[in-house]
Figure 1 (tube, helix red, strand yellow):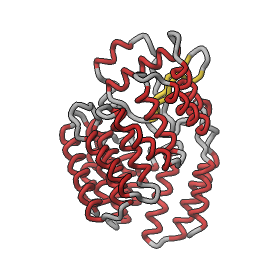
Figure 2 (cartoon, helix red, strand yellow):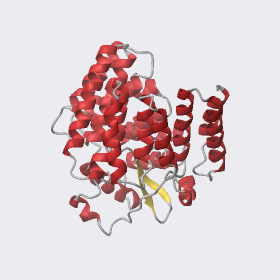
Figure 3 (spheres, helix red, strand yellow):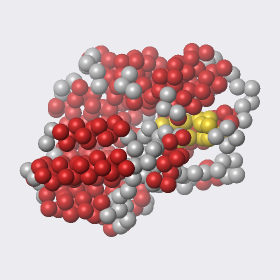
Figure 4 (cartoon, one colour):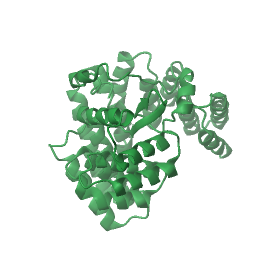
Length: 373
């Protein structure tokens, strides 16, 4: 969004209506904000009522310019309601619960909002997207997939329809595979992805490809999985080639690396990541991704050198990921001693993070991994 959306002139009409704030969730100076307003994924868009200091609207995903315009309009109404309907009030309450980490309460409020909504309620799409997102994040995969199937026709041909179909398909891939359910949601995802009337962003389409790949994997269709992965990789290469700036091109780096790793061609990632490291010398992401590519190529010295460069720039919770990946490099080398030392370093660092950045789940995961070495 930073590269493609926030620079769009169509957003100029909102100047003076909102105070724009971007939070670096890795910076410890922002820990108090994160403790008050938990961020379950990146990107998360929030509109905060300045008088109540509470979340009036929350959307966990990226957005195109038209989607963002609608979110801003909805957020303005939520902060200064014009006699809202009960559905509107319940939707705002659901967003508030979600921002407070109260997932069960958020799920219930989204359900109530949609149940009480009038037939042509303009916020049904956003409510549906938020609902399947929170279901997915809480492993309520059965409910997520069933909701997507039951409501796809109502949302068909919209950004919300695309997101609900793909999220539902991702949920369906996480539970015992039912061929008819997978087939329905695959068809819906493909239909939305290929509809030229829906203004989908490139990274949105990338996410839809990943859902399609997960579905083929769930069906144990190796040939189909590889075919979709090749299609995904070709799409990403084409999108990156159309980029007008280094920032726009680098948006696709993690997606392209993921595709190359899936296809067993990590060497294809090296030139693009080397270029990104030159373009963004203070960003830990390019060398961190290079470390993963070199590890897959079994070039362990190059992988450790890239990891060193990433560690020189990374901070906050993301440092844990870099350290975890470094431990994996040592394990691939057969160096268990340094793998254990690196994981212990990650645990010590994770324990020292302030409230709002410290994750007990992450610490438990690191300890479990250390116990297996």
